[in-house]
Length: 267
Image 1 (cartoon, helix red, strand yellow):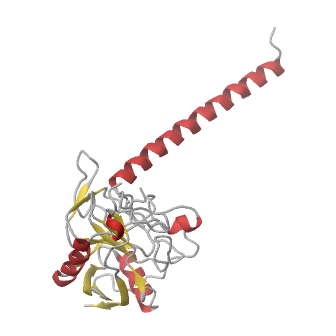
Image 2 (cartoon, rainbow, N blue to C red):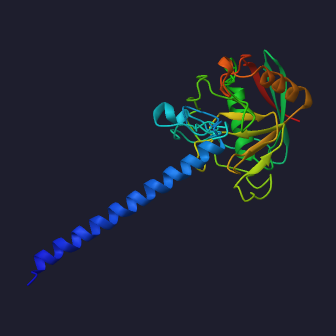
Image 3 (cartoon, helix red, strand yellow):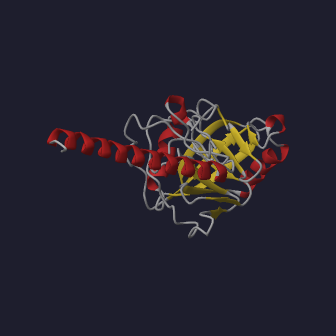
């Protein structure tokens, strides 16, 4: 005859087994998800070993402390860049949420002007103005170029290795702007689009962003917040044409790109 104590132990063992099974199932789901992201963004806009992208346009800033945010390479494996987890609140919203802003990047490879609509992406525009006003981007390198699968140049990391971030994160915005995802789970980011790298998780954008120089298919999980002017797009395409340092398809651009100065002004 089974005693009540034996019955309790049996129930505890069964509960433990169920918990272990659920953990394993969740682990496998996460592994599958990460594999898909990495392959789709092998670009991962590596941010901290994390923006950004995947491609994964990940922002690996979180890798600096934990992992990357995404990488735009075609798998964001480090998809487009990932950012480290928020350590402080995002800046107070001070931009005119009905206005259009211009972010001017003065680089050694040419001038790049990005038009941003604060009505559609107020948190993102506000963050870039806040950082640019503090000269956060001045003297930083565009650390990642992808030339296969996804076609992006990733910038915005003060460390220059994909692991840096501002110490706070901002929410995702405007994710439906490029249309509904197709059967493959992606939408087309047209050439000239500028979007945020992230860690692969919602609301993990920081300072890393990527410039799309050729139509690129990515999951609609990267905030598209700006459009590059014609001269700026040509400058980025020239950098891409020179390829990746060492002949790879994902890594530092062969033509180093440094942002000498970044300014954000209301148009």
